[in-house]
Image (tube, rainbow over all chains, first blue to last red):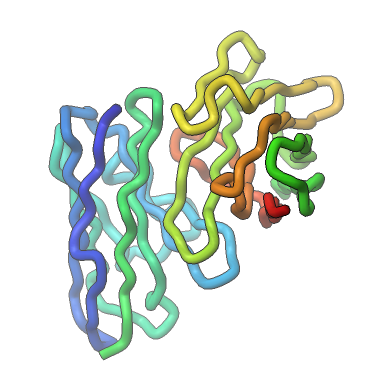
Length: 107
Length: 116
């Protein structure tokens, strides 16, 4: 199974900051990676698919990049509603695997 | 609008069975791959199972292989997860999700608690 190593596991930042979260795959996955945001008690929400494509309705301050084994999610200017948990998911091959999650907290 | 509504969760004893359902609407269900994802209390997301749009192939996490079965009824726009030989560690909120690529729509989740 492909392992997804996500970092950092937690991150403190302020409104207006630029933040980056990374996911590293244990083997190449082309661009078959998505990023998800989850708020407490809610279902995850797709932000980015195919590594860099912005899901409809998601603010443009979210962006994704990467190919092969290294991927990043960038939030260009943090807004109060962005403080959540973020996960990456590889959908290149079964079994699909999530990263461990990154908890983004207010500094 | 796209809606996915899970049902069938509850409390069950270890070794017991449950069948989850996911009723889909607002999109062409018979053209979409579908997935189950779970989240144990206070833990991260875990992919559980997937099924192709026509039901021709199924895929499972090692943790549930041989115990869980994913299926679908395209005439009823419904996805299922039959869970047998349940273990305490299967306790989680179970979500169904639609494939786009990426899991672009999710249900609200249904809680399964395995406890004696």
